[in-house]
Length: 378
Image (cartoon, rainbow, N blue to C red; front, side, top):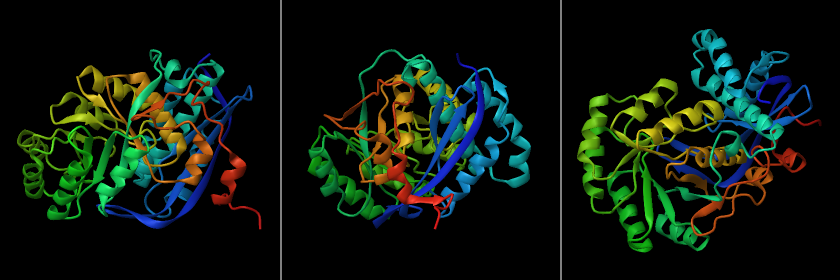
């Protein structure tokens, strides 16, 4: 029941306008892009996926076209399982990656296809995706409100607590004094019982990172995410990990063997791959289980559309190990067209869908107003 023979691979790019840019250390998001992937097999069964496309500004349309192009290689071929398809397609594309230098976009397109194929197969098995992956029955998983930017973050955090959140992540990397001020203000506003994390988005040099971890000592933060460039020397990461009383986290900008190494070493305590950026479901579940086996927490990175959020929820439920799901609290109509009421937060948790596959039924008609590729008829 796990074999796959596709007859169609489709992708559509959407963009949702936003009034206020979303700030991170490396720039600002001025709209909310989303690439929805749909696959159909010879029996007529379908599945949905998502390819990462947040950056650059042309990313969504590029990824959507790439999904369709790469998908043509799969039509009419038979694969023994979604994992077989993921591994085979990844190997088949190694030369193309070298030819184009587009390691990221190609990995993201493959990820979107893989998520859709896993959704399709789980639907055929009449199982929720996390159960099709071998996960034990679970009702809900913990979440944290992510992407709180440097403008009055304590106010935003308090508002999100009123909406059911119990854990909160602040974006840092905007200057030492402002970052420290914001974290102290959040701790004061939320009190000692709240879980607070921070994400520097690779924004600190080694000396600044050392100064930062000393300044936040005593704030009892759950983790410090990506303080350094992911390609910084291993010695710099180890020095920072030894100096910091705040555990380090990362993984959204790692791939394959890099994630395997992160699971084994003693630098990162929280492993955070993004299933739409590399690995899809097939690659990510292997990393997630390796992280848990090595005594670390798998905490999926999520910042995109609704498919990523739901797929990551299933991956967390399947992997176990006490991790937490990243939850984008900002309104996003395109995401809501996918998730409907599936991501209601109650006392810091969201329910795990029980319907087959991802458990979603995207409202394609409602999404269409945001479509940018293929272009809508005039």
